Length: 288
Image 1 (cartoon, one colour):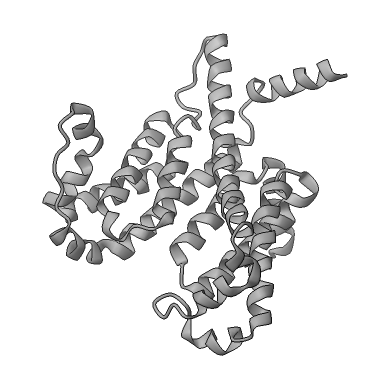
Image 2: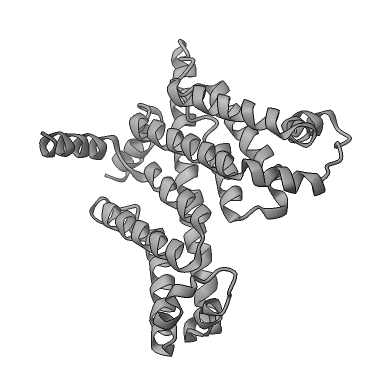
């Protein structure tokens, strides 16, 4: 029985491309999110780049990797125009290794360009883009061994994206659990006094120490629970739905749309093609 389980697990990685529909939707959602972010920050980036001057690295590899950043430093409008054009083209193409590689290159350089005001969402975005490099089905490799490697790389890339998301929650939840300020609710009280982040409209709703304690533990339990429950079929969709509500609340309370957006988009990598097909059928039934 153990041998059969090991064989099953081995075949899972090399038998076929796992959930290619979900993978493509996830990649396209990242492209769309990047497009929106560039569009919203275009004008603001001009002001930042006036004071954020870059120095070319000494190595040729560094110069190649950061070439788009120095293009942005020279002329931001040209850089952003090229970036938006690429994102539009990539959105309508089948996932290709060249496309996923260029997308990682773009997100890495966007992180460098946005560095003076970059947030955790920028780091998450280009790390997900890194794991997505092998998550492509074009060009198809004809040889049998090459095909097996292509499938394995595709599946491992998706799994690394999932691990990236899970570790974000697990490390954050474990860190809060070890922090006395979070366990007592005091940390949440500190957050309510951050005038630059906390929504002033909600100040009165979060003035009770009991509310601070409840929200602190709700966040800790959700983050730790997500890292476990998202792997099981019976609890995955419920966990993802709870996560969407969690990040919408964080967006509203803390004014963190960037982080909420990238985390909610990342949930797509956990969906299965069979679930997407059922959802599509349900929508068709509901629509006239």
